[in-house]
Image 1 (tube, rainbow, N blue to C red):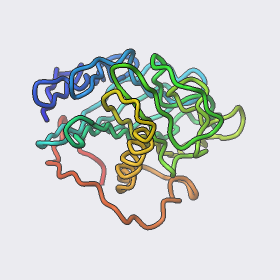
Image 2: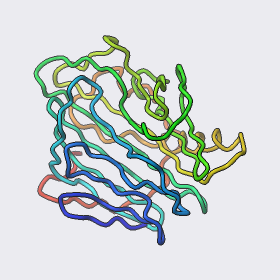
Image 3: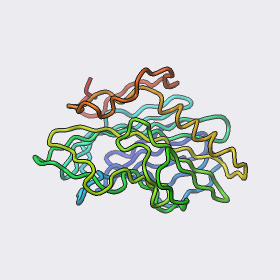
Image 4: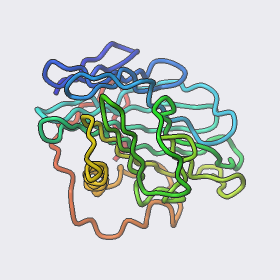
Length: 257
Protein backbone atom coordinates (compact mmCIF):
# COMPACT_ATOMS: atom_id res chain seq x y z
CA UNK A 1 0.00 0.00 0.00
CA UNK A 2 0.98 3.64 -0.36
CA UNK A 3 -0.06 6.72 1.63
CA UNK A 4 0.43 9.99 -0.25
CA UNK A 5 0.33 13.23 1.74
CA UNK A 6 -1.03 16.53 0.46
CA UNK A 7 0.50 18.80 3.09
CA UNK A 8 -2.02 20.24 5.51
CA UNK A 9 -5.00 18.84 3.62
CA UNK A 10 -5.35 15.11 3.03
CA UNK A 11 -3.80 11.66 2.68
CA UNK A 12 -4.60 9.36 -0.25
CA UNK A 13 -4.24 5.61 0.31
CA UNK A 14 -3.75 3.33 -2.67
CA UNK A 15 -3.42 -0.43 -3.07
CA UNK A 16 -1.79 -1.40 -6.34
CA UNK A 17 -3.41 0.77 -8.99
CA UNK A 18 -6.59 1.42 -6.98
CA UNK A 19 -7.22 4.43 -4.75
CA UNK A 20 -8.98 2.98 -1.69
CA UNK A 21 -9.85 6.32 -0.07
CA UNK A 22 -8.79 9.88 0.64
CA UNK A 23 -8.71 11.07 4.24
CA UNK A 24 -9.41 14.81 4.38
CA UNK A 25 -8.08 16.16 7.68
CA UNK A 26 -7.53 19.83 6.85
CA UNK A 27 -11.17 20.97 6.89
CA UNK A 28 -13.74 21.66 9.62
CA UNK A 29 -15.14 18.10 9.49
CA UNK A 30 -12.41 15.47 8.88
CA UNK A 31 -13.78 12.59 6.83
CA UNK A 32 -12.95 9.63 4.61
CA UNK A 33 -13.94 10.33 0.99
CA UNK A 34 -13.75 8.47 -2.31
CA UNK A 35 -14.10 5.02 -0.74
CA UNK A 36 -13.61 2.19 -3.24
CA UNK A 37 -13.46 -1.58 -3.30
CA UNK A 38 -10.15 -3.15 -4.27
CA UNK A 39 -11.64 -3.70 -7.73
CA UNK A 40 -12.32 0.05 -8.00
CA UNK A 41 -16.09 0.20 -7.43
CA UNK A 42 -17.03 3.52 -5.83
CA UNK A 43 -19.03 3.75 -2.58
CA UNK A 44 -21.40 6.72 -2.19
CA UNK A 45 -20.98 9.43 0.43
CA UNK A 46 -18.30 9.85 3.08
CA UNK A 47 -17.37 8.18 6.35
CA UNK A 48 -17.13 10.67 9.21
CA UNK A 49 -16.86 10.82 13.00
CA UNK A 50 -17.82 13.82 15.11
CA UNK A 51 -18.00 14.10 18.91
CA UNK A 52 -21.40 12.66 19.95
CA UNK A 53 -22.74 15.68 21.80
CA UNK A 54 -24.72 18.78 20.87
CA UNK A 55 -22.96 21.46 18.82
CA UNK A 56 -19.51 19.86 18.39
CA UNK A 57 -18.42 22.81 16.24
CA UNK A 58 -15.56 22.58 13.76
CA UNK A 59 -12.36 20.58 14.06
CA UNK A 60 -8.90 22.15 13.93
CA UNK A 61 -6.12 19.81 12.78
CA UNK A 62 -3.05 20.10 15.01
CA UNK A 63 -0.40 17.63 13.89
CA UNK A 64 0.06 14.30 12.16
CA UNK A 65 1.52 11.80 14.62
CA UNK A 66 1.90 8.92 12.19
CA UNK A 67 1.96 8.35 8.44
CA UNK A 68 3.27 4.91 7.55
CA UNK A 69 2.77 2.02 5.14
CA UNK A 70 3.83 -1.55 4.48
CA UNK A 71 3.04 -3.85 1.56
CA UNK A 72 -0.38 -4.62 3.03
CA UNK A 73 -1.20 -1.78 5.47
CA UNK A 74 -1.29 2.01 5.75
CA UNK A 75 -1.84 4.09 8.90
CA UNK A 76 -2.77 7.74 9.38
CA UNK A 77 -2.94 9.27 12.87
CA UNK A 78 -3.32 12.85 14.01
CA UNK A 79 -4.39 15.16 16.80
CA UNK A 80 -7.26 17.57 16.39
CA UNK A 81 -9.28 19.96 18.54
CA UNK A 82 -13.05 20.41 18.56
CA UNK A 83 -14.94 23.12 20.43
CA UNK A 84 -15.25 21.03 23.59
CA UNK A 85 -12.91 18.04 23.19
CA UNK A 86 -9.36 17.15 22.24
CA UNK A 87 -9.11 14.11 19.98
CA UNK A 88 -6.44 11.68 18.86
CA UNK A 89 -7.50 9.65 15.82
CA UNK A 90 -6.00 6.74 13.89
CA UNK A 91 -7.11 5.05 10.66
CA UNK A 92 -5.41 1.84 9.54
CA UNK A 93 -6.21 0.26 6.18
CA UNK A 94 -5.24 -3.38 5.66
CA UNK A 95 -5.67 -5.77 2.74
CA UNK A 96 -7.42 -9.07 3.40
CA UNK A 97 -7.14 -11.74 0.74
CA UNK A 98 -7.39 -10.76 -2.92
CA UNK A 99 -10.62 -8.78 -2.93
CA UNK A 100 -11.40 -7.32 0.51
CA UNK A 101 -9.91 -4.60 2.67
CA UNK A 102 -10.55 -3.30 6.15
CA UNK A 103 -10.40 0.15 7.72
CA UNK A 104 -9.79 0.17 11.48
CA UNK A 105 -10.92 3.42 13.11
CA UNK A 106 -9.62 4.22 16.63
CA UNK A 107 -9.75 7.41 18.64
CA UNK A 108 -9.68 8.90 22.12
CA UNK A 109 -11.53 12.07 23.09
CA UNK A 110 -10.95 14.20 26.20
CA UNK A 111 -13.46 16.70 27.51
CA UNK A 112 -11.68 20.06 27.80
CA UNK A 113 -14.81 22.24 27.99
CA UNK A 114 -14.75 22.78 31.76
CA UNK A 115 -18.18 21.21 32.19
CA UNK A 116 -19.86 17.84 31.80
CA UNK A 117 -20.98 16.99 28.26
CA UNK A 118 -24.13 14.92 27.71
CA UNK A 119 -23.43 12.27 25.05
CA UNK A 120 -26.16 11.72 22.49
CA UNK A 121 -26.78 10.58 18.95
CA UNK A 122 -24.54 8.86 16.39
CA UNK A 123 -20.76 8.67 16.40
CA UNK A 124 -19.45 7.02 13.24
CA UNK A 125 -21.52 8.04 10.22
CA UNK A 126 -22.05 6.43 6.81
CA UNK A 127 -25.41 7.97 6.05
CA UNK A 128 -25.30 7.72 2.26
CA UNK A 129 -25.30 3.90 2.31
CA UNK A 130 -28.68 2.33 3.01
CA UNK A 131 -28.99 -0.54 5.48
CA UNK A 132 -31.84 -1.90 7.61
CA UNK A 133 -32.31 -0.29 11.01
CA UNK A 134 -31.49 -2.43 14.03
CA UNK A 135 -32.49 -1.98 17.67
CA UNK A 136 -29.13 -3.23 18.98
CA UNK A 137 -26.47 -5.20 17.17
CA UNK A 138 -22.72 -5.81 17.28
CA UNK A 139 -22.46 -5.18 13.53
CA UNK A 140 -24.47 -3.98 10.57
CA UNK A 141 -24.16 -4.74 6.86
CA UNK A 142 -25.16 -3.07 3.61
CA UNK A 143 -25.50 -4.94 0.32
CA UNK A 144 -25.19 -3.10 -3.00
CA UNK A 145 -24.86 -4.30 -6.55
CA UNK A 146 -21.23 -3.11 -6.55
CA UNK A 147 -20.08 -3.85 -2.98
CA UNK A 148 -20.77 -5.34 0.45
CA UNK A 149 -19.93 -3.17 3.44
CA UNK A 150 -19.92 -4.22 7.13
CA UNK A 151 -19.34 -2.01 10.19
CA UNK A 152 -18.41 -3.72 13.48
CA UNK A 153 -18.68 -2.00 16.86
CA UNK A 154 -15.90 -2.82 19.34
CA UNK A 155 -17.13 -4.77 22.37
CA UNK A 156 -15.32 -2.27 24.64
CA UNK A 157 -17.16 0.76 23.26
CA UNK A 158 -19.60 2.44 25.63
CA UNK A 159 -23.19 1.21 25.24
CA UNK A 160 -22.15 -1.83 23.20
CA UNK A 161 -23.96 -3.16 21.22
CA UNK A 162 -25.39 0.07 19.78
CA UNK A 163 -28.67 0.74 17.98
CA UNK A 164 -28.40 1.44 14.23
CA UNK A 165 -31.28 3.81 13.49
CA UNK A 166 -29.82 5.29 10.30
CA UNK A 167 -28.23 2.63 8.14
CA UNK A 168 -24.54 2.21 8.91
CA UNK A 169 -24.43 4.94 11.57
CA UNK A 170 -24.26 3.46 15.09
CA UNK A 171 -25.99 5.66 17.68
CA UNK A 172 -24.97 4.30 21.09
CA UNK A 173 -26.15 7.16 23.30
CA UNK A 174 -29.74 7.85 24.21
CA UNK A 175 -30.63 11.27 25.58
CA UNK A 176 -29.32 11.73 29.13
CA UNK A 177 -27.84 8.24 29.49
CA UNK A 178 -24.14 9.17 29.54
CA UNK A 179 -22.18 12.21 30.67
CA UNK A 180 -18.56 12.90 29.74
CA UNK A 181 -17.11 14.62 32.80
CA UNK A 182 -14.63 17.47 32.56
CA UNK A 183 -11.12 16.16 31.80
CA UNK A 184 -12.52 12.65 31.22
CA UNK A 185 -11.25 10.56 28.29
CA UNK A 186 -13.17 7.87 26.42
CA UNK A 187 -12.30 5.78 23.38
CA UNK A 188 -14.10 4.51 20.30
CA UNK A 189 -13.07 1.72 17.91
CA UNK A 190 -14.78 0.44 14.77
CA UNK A 191 -13.88 -1.92 11.94
CA UNK A 192 -15.22 -1.13 8.46
CA UNK A 193 -14.92 -3.96 5.94
CA UNK A 194 -15.25 -3.26 2.20
CA UNK A 195 -15.79 -6.31 -0.01
CA UNK A 196 -17.18 -7.16 -3.47
CA UNK A 197 -20.91 -7.58 -3.95
CA UNK A 198 -22.30 -10.98 -3.06
CA UNK A 199 -25.62 -12.80 -2.74
CA UNK A 200 -24.20 -15.34 -0.30
CA UNK A 201 -26.05 -14.86 3.00
CA UNK A 202 -23.06 -16.27 4.88
CA UNK A 203 -20.68 -13.62 3.56
CA UNK A 204 -21.69 -10.73 5.86
CA UNK A 205 -21.22 -12.73 9.12
CA UNK A 206 -17.83 -13.89 7.83
CA UNK A 207 -16.83 -10.28 7.13
CA UNK A 208 -18.06 -9.27 10.60
CA UNK A 209 -15.80 -11.97 12.06
CA UNK A 210 -12.92 -10.43 10.13
CA UNK A 211 -13.71 -7.11 11.80
CA UNK A 212 -13.85 -8.70 15.24
CA UNK A 213 -10.40 -10.19 14.65
CA UNK A 214 -9.03 -6.76 13.77
CA UNK A 215 -10.61 -5.22 16.87
CA UNK A 216 -9.08 -7.94 19.05
CA UNK A 217 -5.74 -6.12 18.89
CA UNK A 218 -4.44 -3.87 21.66
CA UNK A 219 -6.26 -0.70 22.66
CA UNK A 220 -4.82 2.67 21.57
CA UNK A 221 -2.01 3.90 23.81
CA UNK A 222 -3.43 5.76 26.84
CA UNK A 223 -3.72 9.51 26.34
CA UNK A 224 -4.84 11.41 29.41
CA UNK A 225 -7.05 10.07 32.19
CA UNK A 226 -9.31 7.18 31.20
CA UNK A 227 -12.02 6.72 33.81
CA UNK A 228 -12.42 3.33 35.52
CA UNK A 229 -14.94 1.12 33.76
CA UNK A 230 -14.46 2.76 30.37
CA UNK A 231 -12.54 0.72 27.84
CA UNK A 232 -11.32 -1.58 30.58
CA UNK A 233 -13.72 -4.44 29.82
CA UNK A 234 -11.67 -6.10 27.12
CA UNK A 235 -9.99 -8.69 29.37
CA UNK A 236 -7.04 -10.80 28.19
CA UNK A 237 -6.11 -10.29 24.57
CA UNK A 238 -5.55 -13.61 22.85
CA UNK A 239 -4.94 -12.26 19.36
CA UNK A 240 -2.62 -9.47 18.29
CA UNK A 241 -2.91 -7.31 15.26
CA UNK A 242 -0.86 -8.65 12.35
CA UNK A 243 0.63 -5.41 11.17
CA UNK A 244 4.18 -4.19 11.35
CA UNK A 245 4.48 -0.43 11.01
CA UNK A 246 7.41 1.93 10.96
CA UNK A 247 6.43 4.69 13.37
CA UNK A 248 6.99 8.15 11.96
CA UNK A 249 6.22 11.44 13.68
CA UNK A 250 5.48 14.47 11.57
CA UNK A 251 5.71 17.95 13.03
CA UNK A 252 6.99 18.89 16.45
CA UNK A 253 4.71 16.80 18.65
CA UNK A 254 5.45 13.05 18.89
CA UNK A 255 2.83 10.50 19.93
CA UNK A 256 2.37 10.32 23.67
CA UNK A 257 3.77 7.19 25.32
